[in-house]
Image (spheres, rainbow, N blue to C red):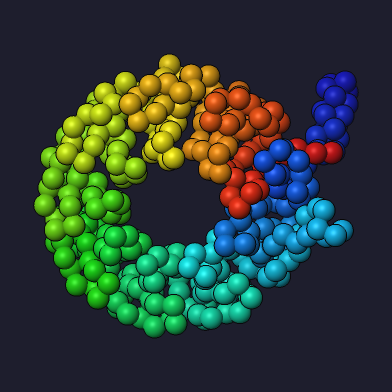
Length: 345
């Protein structure tokens, strides 16, 4: 018994010497900001949210030593419960009064914290929740569409998905930026519009409508995602493939899972391994990874091993491992750097 207790104490002590932090690397795998954050987001519009303990704020990169290396500084001091990335010049923040508001890149609170929930700005408007209902504000904080919906999505292609009705009979429809209902609530579920079409669910199957509400691809899929680069990943029975905007199969369903196309490549899963296909469905990078994310800024994060003990690295578009698997977590590259998680002593 004493030996077991001693082993436990030794193990606990050793584990206590290691901590997992987030930092940032460049495309050569070199540290731009060494691991030191409990949480960290992507750089968007020049700023990234981060947390070193005690609250979230925003950091920015700065050049030092005659511009030979990069360092960082707080651009907006860490004083928020939660923060999100900047979109269209503003970021939503969760304040200590338990309300959400919006700040600009100087840290100025331009829309006072007053909302129970808040979304990103998209096409000039952001959804907000007050008293259990959702509506939309503009960048001055003016309520341009009064809270009246059970759920409201972001605007895309000039339309936003909204849900109306009680919990049992709730249906999805679409409004324009004046709040006018252009497509009546009739769908069990729906996505945002992308490239002129939106995936919608009728009964238990998914199809696609155009911006007039006309069903252009009849409901027939078990799952359906948005169109990117002219193709949409859809699930037929137990396999995923890709269709074009007429609903024709461009890549027959043969994958266990599939992501959107981005810059001509899509991550797809076959026989429990992930690789990358082109728009004809041919393997450009053979399935060999335990998980794979999309390419951003010419590199993609890939996982070697399981989710608990595996390591993340980065490949280029030839499939070459340009940054060896060594990270406990990895985001895509944005603005030349990527947020990665590393266990250190």
